[in-house]
Image 1: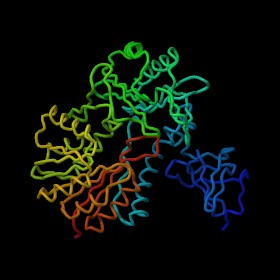
Image 2: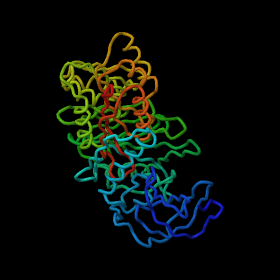
Image 3: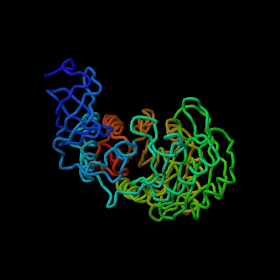
Image 4: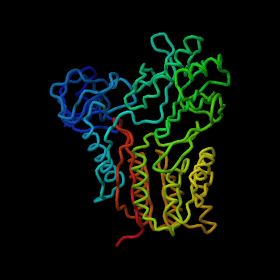
Length: 458
């Protein structure tokens, strides 16, 4: 087996790509030595140049595609190879789904150490384009002018793109109007290096089924010069715009939103639907970005919960109550738990407008609230968890196991931490019965998963 000493930066090699890495890069081997190649896909035969040689692996760049994979296609977006928003547009969509299914299966096997777990094929979209109802555009300088765009892959340099193939089509006039405003009134974009500048990000939220639109301007302080002119420019550019919000974020770093919001125009919230349920969305609240696939995901979660109408359900990391309200119509009582207080307020309002009275929402960290409920004698028959990418806090998992619900439904956006938590729950007596990947984010490496766990082994 060749070691790293045999390879040097700028060397030219030929390689066949065998797999994809977690970030979508091609993975191949030269005499047993692993090389990651940006833009490579399984089946490609490539001529590459070594870029960075480490002890156990190297990275390379494509010089020539000697023989393309049968799954290689021409990306729909002209900047797909440089923009960091999509990683897999050059891979046939059915091949994307196969890779995502296998990624979930391999994570559960390798990280979770669980064998023979039924992992169903990933559920894809009939039309995997223009599906996102939320876009986040950082502000910056491109060729000497202030623009809104997306970050280039692996950097904070901007790609100038208005017509994104996976974003809602309503975004383009918003972005063009704000760029005109920045140029006309000489409004500087935020500079991460100096901490100066005014416009940091622009968020656009769309009610996919209602058509309602919200624009959130993230600014470095409360000062917003020519505010009235900006509002008018947006209203002229986007007929029927329902909400314009200024969000204040003066902190250094890459966190997009601050905690303070100022209403500039219209309503503080917009409304959207998942199935026949209404949800109000504020500037700070989280709402799934792909409503079509969200309905499929939540219906699968409801199926796995197996509710008869007599169960008490805990929905942990409940956000604005989306899953909670789906479950409440089939359960006796649902407790939704979420650390973001604004999301809890939205959840309560969402329950009200959908006429759901058997859902109660509690603000606080799950690792604090769940043990307190258990200590008060409130026990769940079914627990649903939908944690952030870092997965569940071990204290939460331990309390769930002590509470001994009949079933656990685990919704995850990170197969690696999902596998870790499934292993922990397996050791506590919970068997993973079904795993269903759902492609919420076509043309990216991300995949959502919903799992059914039951207590005890036959």
